[in-house]
Image 1 (cartoon, rainbow, N blue to C red):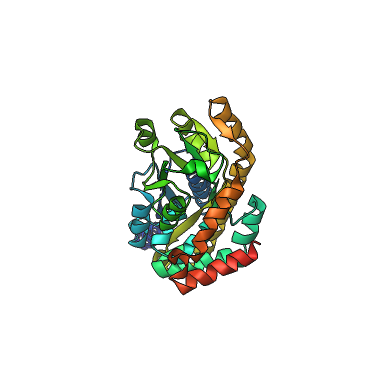
Image 2 (cartoon, rainbow, N blue to C red; image 1 turned 45 degrees about the vertical axis):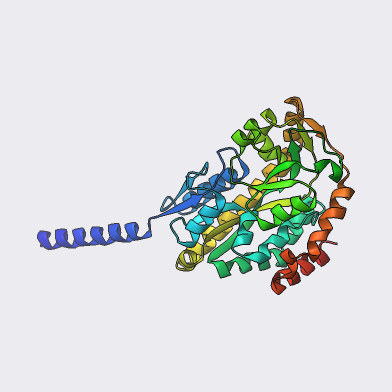
Length: 327
């Protein structure tokens, strides 16, 4: 009898261990930036929430500092499910889903509150749904913030001062075309770019103040103009097929956790922006806090009627929706 009980007990233990092992899961999440950056803050909070809520059955491994390649390469790996998830700057998505570039249309949003209202609403959900056609599950929008121009050649107050500057831009057709229209020599380049700035391979770059501060670009850039020309979002994504294959309860937990992580990071960015700017000034950057944005806006509006937005009817229609909603 004891032998029977022992056999049954061992069998039950084996079943329990097998069930536990079947539920245990590692999520691989890729970003190009370093600890302390906006993307890392999203990833770290997501990891904390998921591991706490799953009681450790689900672990999140963060591959940071471009250890998996640039953002385009990480997106390709997510498509193949070699990497499950990523926190990716919106710009590189336009090579996969043309409609996404609409969110980066220059001078679209008036404020951070305006951003939240639109991207957490129906239009934001439409963009997240659109990227499913490329095999991505869009979970949330986090952010870098409003992008500003820095360079090491001269102060930039109006769009005329941009003429001829060699500016690093994201690997995005929209960003390249925008800076061409503004008069610069745009140079698409992956991240990071510190050494290229230091060596003078490029004159300048454009990023939110948090990025300039975290990556110490003030060491290799003298002039900063608060142009706020583009709101820079991240799209926090997963491989669509992998995500859809998960238990619905796990899907909801991951979705809720990523949205909370995104909102947490947005709040961090917005609450610290003034402090970041003060630190850049303290480090010696010469900052134009009130550049002639109207001169930039007058040039940038030309993009609406260019093939970049008119060629694809769905992109043109989505841009009209965004322009109407953000009047």
